Amino acid sequence: MLYFNHMSKEAGFQGASRRGLELRGGGMADKKRPGSKRNGTAERSLRKTAPISRPKKTDKAGQQEQSQRLSEAVYQQIVDTMEDSLAVLDGDGTILFANSRAAHDLSGSAPAGVRGKNISQFVPKEQAESLIEKYRRVIVAGQSLEQEVMVTLQGADRWFMNTLRPISFTVNNIPAVVSSSQDITERRRAEKALRESERRFRGAFESAAVGASMVDLTGRFIKVNRFLCEMLGYSEGELLSKTFSDITHPDDVRIGLDYMKRQTAGELEFASFEKRYLRKDGNIVHLIISPALIRDDRGAPQYFVGLFQDITERKQAEDAVRKSENKFRTLFNSVNDSILILGLEGKFLEANEFICRRLEYSREELFRKSPKDIDTPEASKNVAANIRNTLEKGEHQFESEQMTKDGRRVPVEISARVIDFEGKRAILAVCRDTTERKRAEEALRASQKLLETIFEAVPT
Image (tube, rainbow, N blue to C red; front, side, top):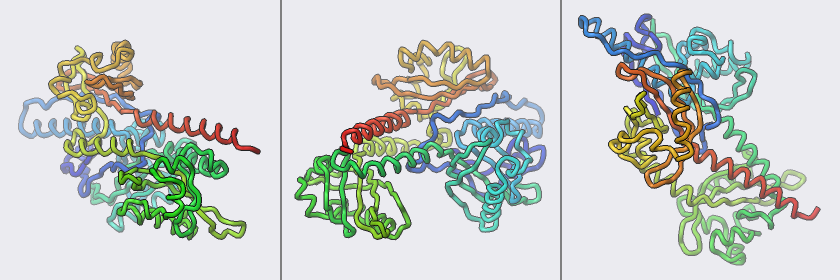
């Protein structure tokens, strides 16, 4: 996460020193949300960064001005490495600032191509009116607004997790909002596919290769499959004598009851949530539960059909990573991506703590290595070509595979660009771990194959 809490009166975004712009007030933060995995397949819009020159030693005012320019260039570089779209707009929808990602999403252009234009020039009229109304509401209320929104950009419908925060963006105290948007289109598509899969699963209860149950409106099990019995360590007869609350972790009982109440009331058609259950032996098992309410022809609730997926190992891994990350929170490491700066001679000049933890090297160990040393043997063959392409084009995006200190392989997506680092040309590389995305893709393929197998086996 990147926090931009304050800039001086002479600074502001994108050359604001020349215009006397000022950004004051609350910061902006990219919150990590569960289930909100980012679109690892979405292309980044990477722009060639202007060299950063160090302030020349002239008079004091000149040094301050040159230092200011250096600070602005550094901020722009940092903002442009963000995966999220970031923009500042006034209450009429005029775009005062946009990072490279936001400009690319809106028009496919550089930030200068959208700055000063109105949001209505990039989205349909009805959507623009709705967005501007929200900008004004946030400015008047002085409170942040977080929401999932669908926006048509360049002819394509896309979903975003959007956060609006009020700020004071001057000249003349012009009220404005900071808009931070994370593309969740793929996540929404995956959720839709899951709902469709659950609908088809109802007809294949007994042959389902996941835990499944039928529960009456009081929460008592009326039917369970073999997989659920094995998952929880109970016999079928034992489970049929219990309610789901009887075997739920005490702290999570309310979760299931609340979803049951909302579905019975018609507020939700489908649901999917995490909850802890207690096995017969007392151990905790983490489950994703997807319940569907079955109604009769008149629409009256009859019973629930639930599917249970064991995610205990995944949760344990996530907890371990979360505990590790919480120990090392700094500005440079607030972005949950690995960041490396590579000198043209092939040596690492800078690295954030995130990549050190992921590859299990100390900074001293990492700086003694080259890109080939941290890549798998197969990927290391492409290092020279990737560096050459980056230098020739100014920027380059590609997939690779890195190797941890103990030999574990980590698939990554790398966005590289040429920068000026301490007066010399260098390569800034942002490496995104795609392990979870690839696992999710493989899990979806496996689920689809399983469904095909199940329905082929069900008599027609």
